[in-house]
Length: 131
Image 1 (cartoon, rainbow, N blue to C red):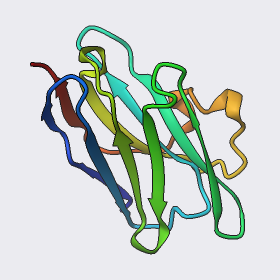
Image 2 (image 1 turned 90 degrees about the horizontal axis):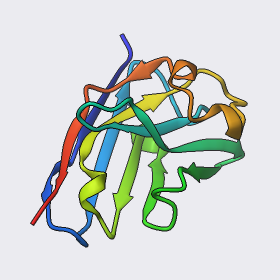
Image 3 (image 1 turned 60 degrees about the vertical axis):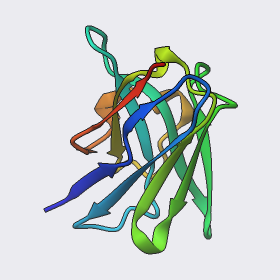
């Protein structure tokens, strides 16, 4: 059974930082896209960013415009784990953050924001940015 488990959410003040982790089990994710989405109350789930394998041990990441330059995705393939480092947090970043994994190894950038391209989802972790 494939599972993704997120940790690291919490309450942080505006301008602060937080790091989320997502560990997968049941299969190896190193060669497949893994990413992050978020969902605020009353809103649809939205794309945050995705990391994609580009050959060898290399991965590259793509981000939504709203978080680019503030959020960074990294991976520890030995631990089947992906991270989301969030800096410069704003109240509008408040949401439940979900980790997701795709089975489409060659997922193109234009398809990364679509939730239907991800087969596995974590349970979500709450991030609240407030003073």
